[in-house]
Length: 590
Ligand code: ISL
Image 1 (cartoon, helix red, strand yellow):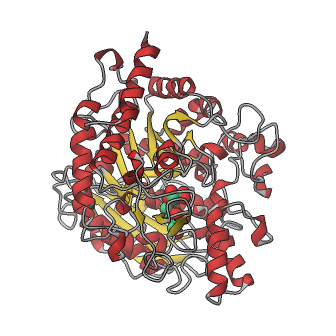
Image 2 (cartoon, rainbow, N blue to C red):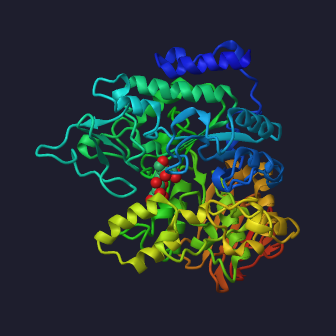
Image 3 (spheres, protein in one colour):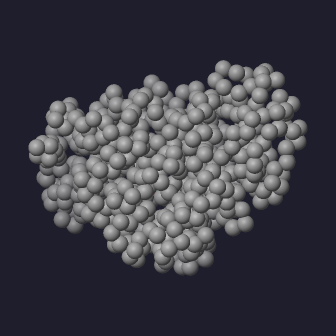
């Protein structure tokens, strides 16, 4: 009975119509939320990102799947996470590993079935873990029925679900906008003689958000998933939906916030769910608009100023560069202070598009364990919701790719085709890709020292990192000094400590070249006055010993919270820290 209603509802929603109707699911479909959600629950929770293709394979086909995730839920519960951000599991030709969706209402067969997805939502819920799905609606796959229909003729009903333009006068693309994956952002459709727009691959045509019917369909789909019991959405490149391609505007377009508010009204309002928008263009001036308490838009955004602050001005992330440590701290400090009283930060070092945290920001050889812990500590004790990317909790590192051909990722190949024309050498590009390429994050998760790191009994779709025998979950579980044991404590700190969740933030010695420091203050206390209850975080993010003179009000007895090299009971006037040593402690009353 339930299945019949679900099918009927799905058919109705797929047919489109007014979203006012679509957002009202039949009563019988209203399931009890499997996950206990209270207002703003996500502020004290830690998120965990799963890239399903690379997490755990249950059937030996070399590709991770939902049943694999189910088998690891207890591991994630022990890690102490509050929700899983699940990269796309929807039906897809997988040209961009699921970020090209051909059916928003179904699951890719290599990942499982809708029943498996329902089981995952329920089983995660039983463990108080919410499932946050990936909303990829800037574009769909070119194999989505809408696009297949749309390209059949200029008159096709869903034609304006996508963005079509006539060739420029004299022929060629309508303008010179470029795709993020290399090449022009316009592809000619021979049948109709018009170009369609795609900010990513030509197999990922952009949806036309100017069309209210399309927007209604997206909102209907979101509500359908909410009614199935999910805890929220991570929204893929959401800052691109308000674009005005005719005027060369892609990110942060004129209609962006109007659409986000409309989406909020149609789907999120009244639900205690979490939303996190991927927004490369988010900045200190518009962050509150996205995430402010009264904006009616999103819970938080993934902004990338700390990631891109040291990218090359001409060649971007594919030209190798060292991290500018002081600039990195200043970026975090600016976001922390700007969103201190209104708005909310997301906190992350890594995701499926980025290099491994310990390889980019730490030392993945001599100080792998120490630097993984220190990076975890400075990030998780800031104000905001921290995200762990799969494998970060065991200190997984970048792999080494011997040639450009060894990379799987379509972005790497598309960018190489463009950048070589612009003068980057093969050796430079390879060095850049070995530093920042997306495949580092996508090599399979290391569960054990068994063949293929226990990820699969078959042949993994991307080779496992050569260091899996040392770096894996099984080994880490047996070691109280492991990165994993440290992360298990980090997640609990946040749950137990209201100062970490709601307290203020004050940067310390911002210009120090090796040390990172800040204070988390009880909401109403001026730290310079009493100091009691404030949390001090100090970390040496370098491979040399380093020291700093502390201001007088910080010196004295403290209660250790979590430190990498043994508990800290006193802050001395000059604090000396070993390479990658990090300390967090609570100031006592004077
Ligand atoms: O890392 C990036 C910036 O240079 C890009 O690889 C990435 O495309 C960008 O972060 C947007 O990412 C999101 O949308 C893409 C998808 O390939 C990414 O995996 C996704 O996170 C298109 O859907």
